[in-house]
Image (cartoon, rainbow, N blue to C red):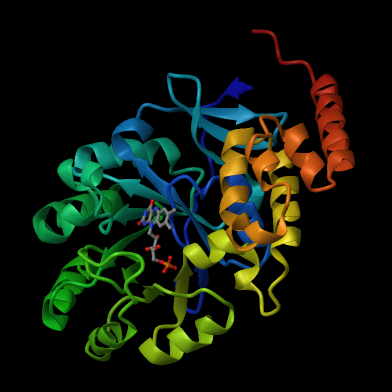
Amino acid sequence: MSEDNGSAPRRYIDDYSNKLILAPMVRANHLGFRLTCRDYGADIVYSEELIAQKLKDTKRVVNEEAGTVDFMYKNGYAVYRTCERDHPNVLQMGASNAVVALQAAQVVCGDVDGIDLNMGCPKHFSVHAGMGAALLQKPETVHDILTTLKRNTTNSITCKIRLLDTVSSTLDLMKMIESTGVSAIAVHARHVVDRPRDRANWEKLSEVVKSYFGVPLIVNGDVFVHEDIAKVREATNVSSVMIARGALYNASIFQPHMESVDDVIKRYLRNSMDIDQHPSTTKWNIMQMMQEMKKRNPNEQLISQSKTMKDLSRWFDLEDYYEQSTSAKLEKTTQAPPKKQK
Ligand code: FNR
């Protein structure tokens, strides 16, 4: 690995309309999973929410063996990883003030195409710290963060909100957000008090859309199979669709003919091995995907006890791939040109 603060090319997303998008998901949306969703046709992939306060203190490291760029925190763990195949990508940020948001954005701006502000997370840790859904009640802070990011970075800037109590208050919020120069607004079609099991309110969102003529919108909520994409587009008149749980359970939801979960897991494992992803990170997603297959997979208990990528590869008949990818990396490392002596 080598540290690198070098200049990177300008990255930007020109057009957010008519796109299929992987929604931000804490724990789930690491690089191996984003690559898998991209393989199945996701046009844009979001990271999990990364807290700006932590992200700003990471170091950009080029990981030659894995072919990735890793943003390392002082505890030795990568907070965020990306690679060439990961674009166009959006990094979602949790922030409560503009200075810290900008400091974090400046660390990653050469390696991401878009930066998104999380304005929808209802969890205590987020709201308590003035982030996520707390921002829905703080238009001045939102204005400050978004204009600061827009003026001082070259990435496209977006945010992800929820529906407010009334159509008109939602519209007011969206118009204020639009005035900051954002490229798009993602709307999770639920209210802050709604739970994930409550039905997404596509009807209310369609009411909002009828009176909104601004930047492209992205609809999010309750797309669980590929056919739901056309349904939500028709119901809301929004062309871009963002998918969370539907992709977590079966990442091939982005393509017209969905694959079996077993095949999706295999693809995900291969992607994860290619980039040296941590086994416990990898296993968590596999366990989510297996929700559907639980009754059919007698090895579930053993898979959940796997501690290494080699163990995981065994349960999915990928031992050969594991051996090849490990030896290919060894070869790459030993053949890497010697570093210039200073
Ligand atoms: C989420 N969601 C979420 N939202 C967000 O803005 N930032 C985040 O980091 C997360 N993390 C997260 C983790 C997990 C495991 C889930 C299931 C969800 C919310 C998510 O992006 C989305 O708005 C909702 O799940 C609704 O979309 P679906 O699941 O109905 O497609």
